[in-house]
Length: 132
Image: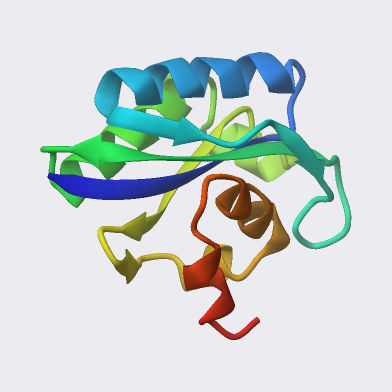
């Protein structure tokens, strides 16, 4: 079994519904899912609409590539496309940040939008051992 730690975000109304939909999707893809609460963070660059975020972790027999491809398909099904990106609209963003014990997305790993939820689901030891 592979362990995935996933960060989910949305800055487009209805933000909460997008995150709840993503959480239901994750529960269909992963077993033993632990999820943080939903919380708001400012836009990554400090401009634009704030995000609702959450972090979830669970186990899968899928490969990283398969789970990531399915996550990107879920984003697209919620309206994430080139036009939305050009407007700064993020209906749904699903990123695998940690795969097993490897930090796949160090940029996201070191951001508050990930750290807040990661602490809630019990991975502070990993956060404390990383700079940033």
